[in-house]
Image 1: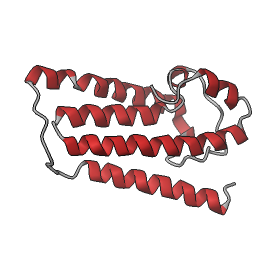
Image 2: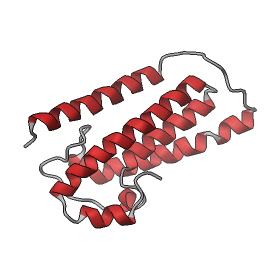
Image 3: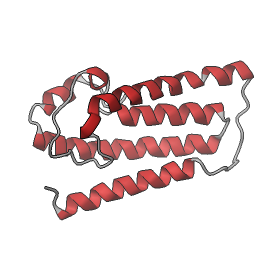
Image 4: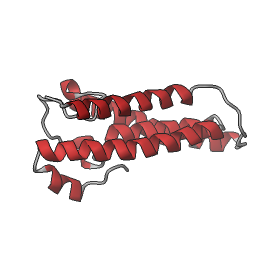
Length: 150
């Protein structure tokens, strides 16, 4: 069960994340980065990896997936698969895709939003990890041996 403060933080983080996602797709031209065609294509590789990592993670989570940082009541701690290379593979995937597409589309605006997403995910994951430590005492060991992001 979630307390009032936890729900406010949950909704705050998810609302801010949604706002950044929407803002990312607003066509704004501040300055344009100009890259050669082959270099632009290479910048898609982190995004392709991010999509693969996201799909693998979603498959692993199945019915335990939630947009909120508070762990689901019926959840269990997963430390294998995608979670063996990153404690937060979904956040990692989103940042990789946003960065990759931002470079590919030669948009400094998208790169700025990507940095803001990374900052948001840093704070959201800190909050999430405090809750995971309360629910799963073994999370402390996992946290020490696994990176937060890639």
